[in-house]
Length: 520
Ligand code: TNX
Image 1 (cartoon, rainbow, N blue to C red):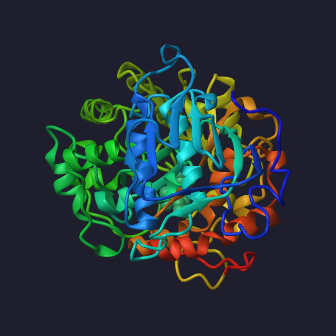
Image 2 (cartoon, protein in one colour):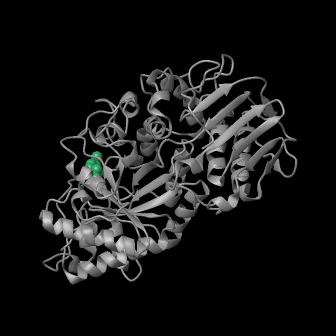
Image 3 (cartoon, rainbow, N blue to C red):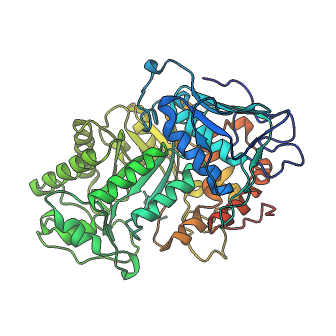
């Protein structure tokens, strides 16, 4: 790892906030070490970006980020003052340039160093993924873009700074429920853009539920034709073509974000039951459902038609998804006995393994037989998380999504026009001020693979709705997942976050003006 010790920055003022006069720069998530020092550097029209051969894609992202602010993109070439360098022996690692190959393996793979001084800008990392994270930090040192994209036509000046950084947790996820309301590939890509700025590296897509089925499955066109034609409230729904889905996956990978697809089973399946009668024990197709109840539907587990369905669906997710994880859902099934449920989940986990992937599921899967390395996603805030502990005892890992902290679909307060409140109101401080490694007694850093913020969409219909619920809470959860506990402090975070108001406005991002932040 490139970084040691630390806490926040030392030199000029709290954490990632630079000395007075440079107050527009504020970093989220806070890097492990930040020292503002000495003269800065101006990227002008003749500045050249030089990148290691494996890092061409990352250089392109940086050039684009500069263009968003200035209206022109710097050239790439030899001998530039902006350097993106792969420093370690590439044979030691994935060497899969331009892809998310190193994501979700070891947080050290995402480490980087960023230096700005009078001579230029340098980002160094062992892998392209680390360079990409460093470039996301660099972007936060640029001034905000305006809608015209020419906020700083003459050039942009970055402060003198030395940053050494790496993530605390390997899995830093954002979940989007495209089943309750459908969101197009273009909308999902915009969400990827917005969340990857905060070093999120997992996009968990909740692709099926009672109200809709969004993933095409070869040989089963009725799933999308019928199951895809509904959503909450009776709107038109929709589904992804194979091409749409692949486009989302590759767009995300170019930003070093892995897609983890979820088909929710054996409950939350009314849309599938509406499409295919053979999945119900009475052999009859269900009526489409556009309400918001949960827990009422289940596959006819044990029926040969259901076995074939589950094998097809898992096989298809594996075929379409290059990332290492497939999510099988597993939440809130009231219609099955514990034994039926556990047998079903154990079999589904086996099928995922046979397809060459690792399984993930909501914490309820913990009581079933799991392969080592299975991910259980903790979400229930109440009671003893016996099922999550059971998953850990079997060699599983936890992704922490406690509903009372991370559920972006909860209202901020009683005034919020969108959202639910079953897990309470979640204001910015609630989303920020908790620790994933102490949330469950008996579970520590070693059992926690990461943190994820789910955005359920019973009440969210538009991109604006998604943005309003995600911002500013998503950046709070992203910092929980990235930054060491000892370096995090809410007042400091709120001060740094203030600078994002103008950025979001410039990007046309709808956001909640949390009262804890003094927005400029
Ligand atoms: C619980 S969290 C659910 C979802 C709902 C959500 C609404 C989980 C695994 N299940 O089905 O959309 O609450 O907040």
